[in-house]
Length: 141
Image 1 (spheres, one colour):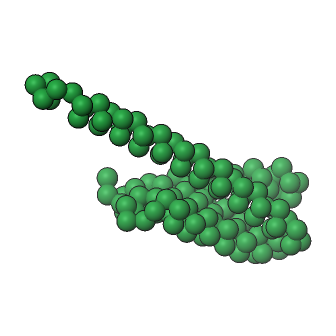
Image 2 (image 1 turned 180 degrees about the horizontal axis):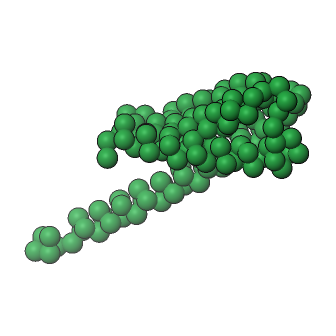
């Protein structure tokens, strides 16, 4: 599957999940439908948030980018879209954006650290395997 096909698949899944998550969170907050914004606009924004989050994860497949660069670009796009969506849907006072952005920052940092440690272990295991392969007598190779 090429990059464009993977993006379309991830974006489609993200759009569907975005609607379900957005409606779920809005329902839990006690205000499932905003009086100021038509329902179709709300649903489209939830879907777009899923597309940005899940579809945007395709940037991790760009091999010329470091994990740090891909993470920063993905993080920035998610935060920017979240703030724009929040302003349109009136999520509340600036403190709401600050708390949510802080939580998202912590989540991204934890995920990045876990993936970094996992990647480092994988590379170490591969290097160890390569060393043991190279140290075998020539007749075994």
